[in-house]
Image 1 (cartoon, rainbow, N blue to C red):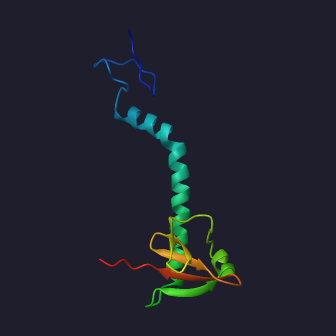
Image 2 (image 1 turned 90 degrees about the vertical axis):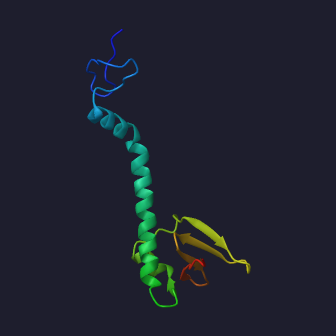
Image 3 (image 1 turned 30 degrees about the vertical axis):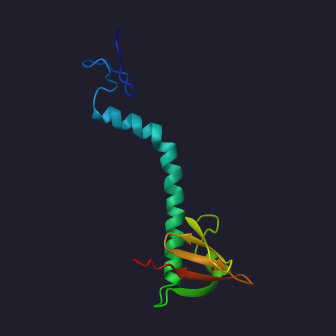
Length: 120
């Protein structure tokens, strides 16, 4: 029974379970299979990194926190739909984080941007 490369269609010679004629064909095939998933993940990670950069810029003081408006965040390109995790405080406040930077929605379109410092 003849077998053919899963990428280029060339006839395969060698092991019975061989699927590709060489490493290039294996890489091409796997890149095609994974390209949709990779592009979605890449786009989401780019949004998260951009959100983090914006918050880092805002909370760059020694205290690691600052107050800003939603308008200023949006002007810089901040996307409120993407964050890495949620932190609920004992007082009932909910912070949305992008990695170690987070924000708390305040009244009148104001936001408190903070940097979470891990205690070792």
